[in-house]
Image: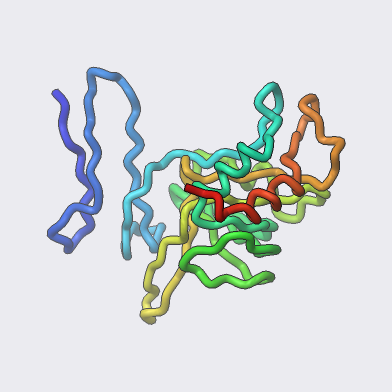
Amino acid sequence: TPASVVLRQAGLSQPSCALEYNPVRRVEYPLQGYCTNTFNEQGECPCFSGRCSSCLPTPGHRAKMNLDTLMNMACEADVGYELKVTNVTNKNQWVEIDATVIHRNKTGSHAVQPNETITLMTPSVCNCPHFYFPPGGETEDMMYMLSTDAEIFLDRRGQRVYRYLLDERSRILRVSHSAKKTLQSSSPAASHYDLETAFLQLWKCE
């Protein structure tokens, strides 16, 4: 029988989120909450889909990413940063990824500056982006994150803490200056020129 599954944060009268569940469809429904204290599941616990972000482009016929594709991604994203992963830590059901901001193309509520460190969170079952861009990895390619805005939490001292929760709305792009990245490449990349052009044309977004 179809039913509504509700995730409710302790102490709150209103549910944090709800999902319609229909077992007849035989589909897995990831309903996951991210808590600021991941070890004992305490603190603020917003809902999270539990789905993984996408590392693009992928090898094969879908590898080519033209300006229109990048433009759509840039328009849909709340933030657009060039990042460099510096540290990866497993925390219970989550992976915490520290990354240095190299360049900002589009910003949200987090007034982050270049050379500052931000924290990304992804479910432990996901391998994007930390398997594709491991800490200390040497590559000429760049890593760009096009994602939703940061979630804002309060720490024990009442200070704001920003976390970027990666999910199916997040795109992690491998970007290159080189024109030699072809469809046959084992690690195809989007054109840096096209991506920069897309960000410069955000005024065209509907």
